[in-house]
Image 1: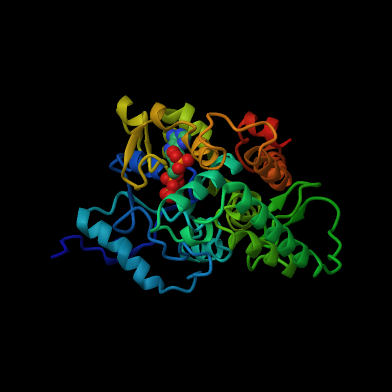
Image 2 (image 1 turned 180 degrees about the horizontal axis):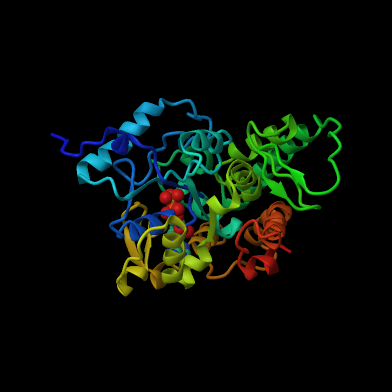
Length: 362
Ligand SMILES: Nc1ncnc2c1ncn2[C@@H]1O[C@H](COP(=O)(O)OS(=O)(=O)O)[C@@H](OP(=O)(O)O)[C@H]1O
């Protein structure tokens, strides 16, 4: 029963224009619900996420999934709406931590615009932990059901460190880099002194590949190690095609954030209702991509939930208690990775992370 009045087959089957690749638990549902109120901005799939090239469980990498099936899903959107003039994107938040996804997406459309939303790494890890713990339907519920947050952090950080140490032991001498302005493997200019960015299939050696897999197989803690995954995207796509946003900005300056995304996508500006901009979707209060709560009602609930479950319903974690220690352990883990984000911001490769992150992780 599809409306086939649109004549141009190529227009219907052309690939997506943009991809919001993650990160999971960083506010992607809020971005999706509000941004797609703009009639020029649409998405592929029935729900929010297609999970087409990588699923919830990191081992289910699907980069060689049938391209034609994906194009058909995109075409369905154009046929349903009987329009070819809107921007169609993929919203799978699982694509950020997937090693082969930047390569697959680049092959799909070299002009693709990539959008990445990042939240304070500890907050993201906490958010995912609480979600998995609370719902038996969640894929990592079994992993965390009998553990407190500090217990889980201790085990997982040790496992991650072991994995990364084993990866580092495979280090071989690196080829000498030529002096002066250099070209990356993909031919893009980088300034003197800027580290070369490598990606899957683009200069990634065994050490960094294995390291990336250590983090990509650790959904709750490892998926907050943003620089490793972001580097992969920046190696494949020119920085002009990669927009990095921060959850803090979505929270404090929602309208500006949506306008920035619209400008990046080349979409006509939409007039958003103020009451809509005040909404937070898929919060710990109401786990569903479409479930909305007022911003003020959900703030800081996640850390409270985690503390309450472990320290006897206190309002604040005790100074040297297990929860505070777990947070410090995570801050130590994330520190060098957050620092890389700041250095990329200084080099103009990405938008600067929130100042608050500097105080926490510097
Ligand atoms: N505007 C704004 N400001 C601050 N925080 C926000 C905002 N929008 C979403 N959120 C929080 O993001 C969490 C949900 O993220 P996602 O929608 O990306 O989750 S998912 O990957 O689709 O499962 C979820 O975190 P938790 O509440 O800690 O679970 C949301 O509360």
